[in-house]
Length: 101
View 1 (cartoon, rainbow, N blue to C red):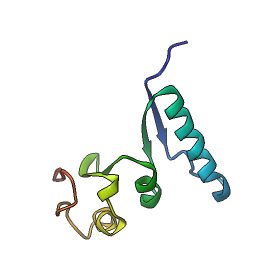
View 2 (view 1 turned 90 degrees about the horizontal axis):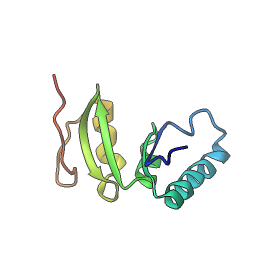
View 3 (view 1 turned 90 degrees about the vertical axis):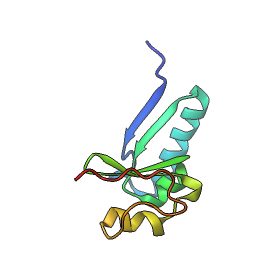
């Protein structure tokens, strides 16, 4: 069997009992560290994404509208973009990519 270099997860905690969510993410973190894997995960929880990631990408209609190092990301900056009430950019936004019309 081949040795994968990346692990891709789409909402790994979706539908899981809240008491198990941290256990799932801790197990994934341990696996990624042990096997030296790259990890890409999709999560609807902005807070969890910021807490568990090195880099954040916010997408809208298939386009990246915000890229930020998670340490400089904040829900105050991301929520308005996700909700469509603000445009990307600003001093801590990283490198925004404008949405395509």
